[in-house]
Length: 478
Image 1 (cartoon, rainbow, N blue to C red):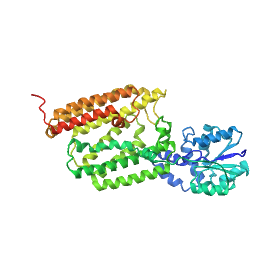
Image 2: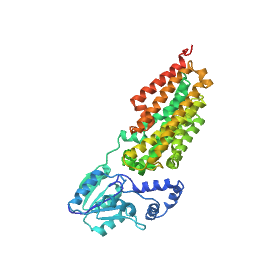
Image 3: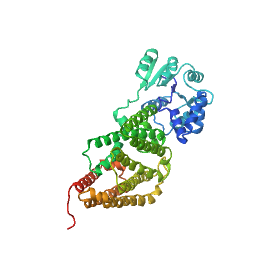
Image 4: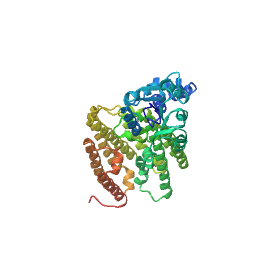
């Protein structure tokens, strides 16, 4: 039990792959780097890793770790055992991890000439420690080292490999990664965010034309297509924004940021979801397919560039919400009022600002100066508060113009009853802003509006009043 423990990094000490994360950061800096990666891939592995490491950095503090295994290493370190980090990751990454954890006596890692994997790692271990050592690894690539070590520590090893190793070498300890369950997968897909795609039903609902089964079926298919495409872009965003998510007080629990799902799994999920969404969109019409592709391109552009530009990000979010309504109009097809579209831009601009203000309030409570990965500072609240409230009131004005529009006067039995909806809208939006100022807005405002009991009552009242205005003729003015 006094033998030194040699610890692998990727997949063992941390569930993630630091090279893949470095590649994502490299591509995020400039999409053109994707073509450079293809060219660099022809070079030797050590040279390739060195180039990526020269242009990116991985924070040892923000990486997720196998806490149970890490605690075991700390206990063994306290007993006097020598702990060595031996990894195929680049030296800069290994040093960052070693500096943060402060439990390693030595670090063996890839440099500009040697890729420390498999036999090369075994040779480096023997050169530094001799033949007597314990090795902790996680995959088939570690089998040559396990066969030559005195004892093995298995961390998250596939069951078939684990059975084979137990027959060939003495196993000191085993640690398992928890298998991702349905809840983790649903969280990665952000199924709760699919509620936003109910906006596709707005044109059909405002026209109060649910009698046509074909139109209803079209909007249901459109809803599924948008939801799958949205989940694909959410995963894409989470993969690119993984380090910023880890630094965020709530986003750090997301499946990819926490390491509960691997980056490779995320890439596969994103591609498959997008393919299915495209097939469904094409089954409706070319027009709807165009709207879906426009939504995806805007989302990707937002993720890569616009999300870090102050105010442009919230404006883009409001346009993405409005795009859903327009897409629903094309899928149905049902003509949508110009004033209703203008209303949606203002109200979603206000809700996007609610989200930013809520994040800044949280940062202020924690003594932070600003948000992670976005160009917002706590002091910006003095501008964002009136801007958001003003957008909310502008949305009510647009709704009033919708009530006065000729098509509304003709299509509704009692259009003036919609003014009661406008009053409820004023109260609801004011309530959101008050809760935000109190630091009680802990979710996306759209999701909060759907899950909050008070908001549910208000929305229900607005829907009932809209239906009554459409079908019930009431003489309000003598």
